[in-house]
Image (cartoon, rainbow, N blue to C red; front, side, top):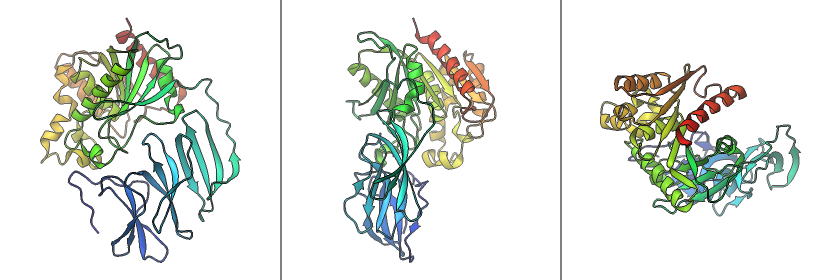
Length: 406
C-alpha cells in the first residue's frame, strides 16, 4: 500500500500504527485520502477491507483495539470543539458514543479492554475521573484533592457567519456590562496541529484573569488548524501566514458585527510559539487592525526551525525559497509601526532564543522601537511555576493596559 498527498502527509502521531490484529492477517490503518481522517481495516497485503469510521466523524485518535470482542475505541465526535470516546465494530457498521456530556473526555483501557479510566473536563466546569466498564457502567470514582477555582470563566462558544465560518470563543469580564465597549485581546495560536476553541471551560481560566482587567478575550480557529478536513488544513501549503492572518481578521470583524461590545479600534494580540510568530506578524503587517502585540517564543525564520515540521508545510529551502521568504518575520520587520513586546526563554530547546534575537536585531537596524523581556527557562519558560506564571502574565497585562486603555 502507498499513501500520497499533493501537499503533505500527516502522521497519526499517537496511535502507533499499523496496529496488527492477533494472527497477523489484518491491521488497522488511518488515512486522510477521502478528505477527512478515517480508521480502516486492511488485509496483511495492504488491501482495504473496509473503513471503520465514517468520513463525517471527526477522528482524533485510536484509543484501544479490542480484537476479542471485535471493537475499536477512538476519540472524536461530531463537533471539533469536543472530544468523546466512541466504539466502532471491526465488522463495520455504526459506532456508539460512550460519552455525551459536552466537553473533553479521554479513556485509558485495561489490557483486556474490560474497563477503562474515564477522565473528563466539561463545558459546565465539571472535572473528574472514574472507572467504567466497557459497557459504560460506573465501577468506581477516583477522588481528587485538586483545588477548585473560586469562579469559572464567563465563556461563550460561537461560530461566525463569515465565509468561511470559524469557531470562536469569547471570555467577558466578570463585571461585564451590556452596552459598554471593551478593548479586545486576541489570544491566538493559528498554526497547524492545534486548536484554541474547545468545550472545556477550565481551559480559559488564564483568559478570564485577563478579561477581568477590563477586556474581552477572543479565540478563533481559522484555516490550517486540524479537525475541519484535509482541504481546510492544507490551505496553508507554501505560506504559513497569509491565510492565517486573513482568517483571524475576518473572524474578528465578523464577531464585531455580532457583538457590539467588542471595540475593534483597540485590539491587542498575544500568543506563544506559533502564536508568538503570528502575534509578531499581525502587529507588524496589520497595524490597521492590531494596536499592539506580545510575541512569546516566536519562530522568526523558518530556516532555523525544526526541519521535519517546517518542510511539511513549506518544502525545501533550496527549492521553495519563496515560501520561506513570505513566511519569515524578517521580511516585514522594517514595517513595524505598533508597540511590540518580545518574550523568550534563553534556554528554549524548541524555538531557540536565536529567533527573537534575530528579530530584535532586524528591528534595531531598521530603527524601530520594541520591548524585549528575556526569561530563564526553556520553551514554556517555567510555566509550571505559579510565581513565574503570575509575573509573566502581569508583565503582559501591564503592556496591554498601557497600550489599549484610554
